Image (cartoon, rainbow, N blue to C red):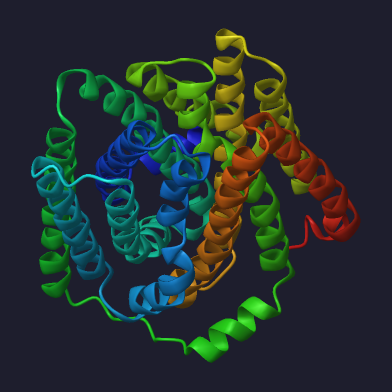
Amino acid sequence: MHAELIAVARNPQYRHFWVANIMSNGAIWIQNTTSSIALTHLSTSAVVNSLVQVAATLPFLLFGILAGQVGDKYSKPLVLTVAQLSLGLVSLTLAAATWWGLLSPALLVGVTAAFSVATVFRMPVAQAGIALTVPRDQVRHAAVLNNLGFNIARTVGPAIAGSLLLALAYFQVYLLTAAMLLAVAAYFLYGFYHERNTTAKQTEFISFRDTWKHIYTSTLFRRCTFDACILFFAGSVIWSMMPFIAKYHLNQSTAGQGSLMGATGLGALLTVVVLPAVLKIRHNHHSYWLCYSLMISSIAAIWLSSHLTLIFVALMIFGLSWSMAVTLLNGEIQSSFPRQMLSRVIAIYLIVMYLAQATGSLWAGLVSQFFETRAALMCSVVVLALGLGLRTLMFASTDDDKE
């Protein structure tokens, strides 16, 4: 591991924040994977199966800006505490509904949407919190470690979900995620009371009008949102349709579904090895070329092959490409805007990112429903190739501008 990452990891304030995020994200991944697997047993419709991913992303469009405003205006530990409590309560509600035998596709999609609303208010503050725990020159490397933590959760979460469902009922898994989320809420509540007892000076609040002006004039922000639109729209075919593909095309069990989804996280763990070297590349243009190329090759392999081992490897490569893209984009945004407006900048970026994922998931479900899943995979490869070409024409000369 590079010296810069070690220096960030030695920061106790960042380290505690990092562990709390791993635990929270792990619970979220366990719950979302459990819900996706449950839906494959409740409905054979490709469109209905894609709706869990749509429900998990669409609330960012409705509440993203409000979440950023709240995150910049109020105490970040308090906002995180309320968000975590809400997540825990939603998990408890889902566990109770499952226990009473009320689980249905409509209920599962609706509760997933409610769960996502709480996640909306948590995510911009959790990402902005990175910049508050480390010096500005360490933000990009802190983002790498933060993404590593997220991908640890992404790796372990789906695999744990698939394994737990072999021995536990759905409501028991939901109870476990509720306990994890409420434990993290207690940690952030402690941070809120600690913050109240300090005399640290509050930073001046920047109006949303000034924030929007800063964003509107930023070439870097436009480039990042373009990449988010293309990469996350096309890549959503994997997140939304892979449980469906695993069950109905690869004849996998519940554990097999979880293992295949976990392969993406396993590949994403390679980010901590690959990305520090990528960050040393002088031209950001080349870094993004690598992300696009890896995602194109991985989705193409899944499209063209039915060999389980090859698909597993392709999912690992896909996880690496997705993780690298997320880390590069997040790192650029977090290190390029004033901290007083960072939650709102991140929130607006996340709206674009999750709009791309929501529309990409729905689009993949519709194509799979009316044609087949291979057609959806093929279309994703085409979108990525066209997007890479457009990116080269539009932004190659501005990739290394310092704003």
